[in-house]
Length: 162
Image 1: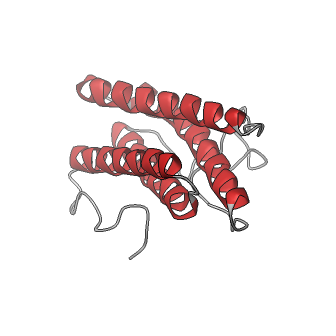
Image 2: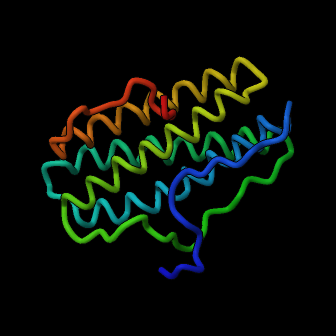
Image 3: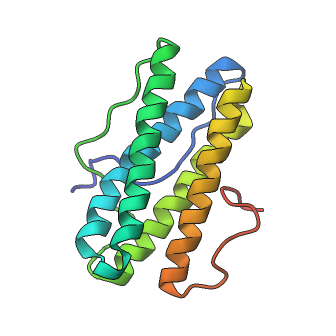
């Protein structure tokens, strides 16, 4: 991985208003899902067997979510952003604790991206999908924080900085 490769994590862009904002937020969230799936490959390689089930559960959630968003965008006749070949990780990952920190960060980044979709959603279906994704990311982040022994294990408003 080099610095010329896409950076990792959520950095929702300022989106236009209306349906364009909804589609842009979904596309941004999809890009975060692609990065998270990549990151879980690193997490999986460095995690102890005691968290294998957590890694598999998280990876399955993100893969399903990615596939669902690609289908949602296709239904709107929007080309979904493709996954990058690699991503620049936010920090060095060389131990099981580093892997758990990366997983918690990815889930928090996902919560941020999905909160943006909730805020820009034009339909009840998009809001419901994004709310579920936000909740799943927040719960998964809390589970990783528990693995790390971090306290508090969650924030008051996942996906935000309130």
